[in-house]
Length: 158
Image (cartoon, rainbow, N blue to C red; front, side, top):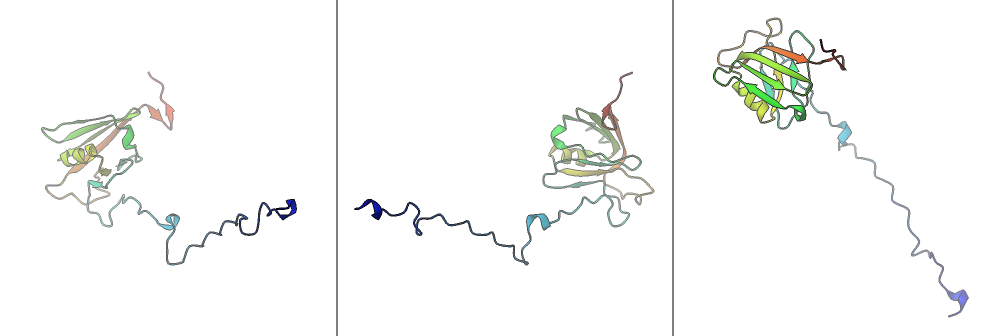
């Protein structure tokens, strides 16, 4: 074989081919960005009081307060739950940055949903927002939040 008879290093058959262009998504398929998650339902469509909602694995617990701003503490920060299991009228959620005291009636169902990380929303009942609740359902009368944070800054200790 003569030195001039060597095949070229990149012959037409072995030369790398450019990557094919990506296909444009078809109109009948949805891209993940186009799929909308339903927003949490803060107010049911009517004035019927729904004390809490469950979902499969919510990342945070929405505390919907009637007279103050709502809070969205993440479940991974929940340290402990203190529950009055004899009467079922109060429980406290402890976080590193706040404590949430909830009072009402028949709260055991809500506490167990929180304990199993299934509770997505807790709603405080207020007469201006909801009709009087029916008999035999849980009623959240107050949600009180004790926090050492004010507007994202540490409160001065007195």
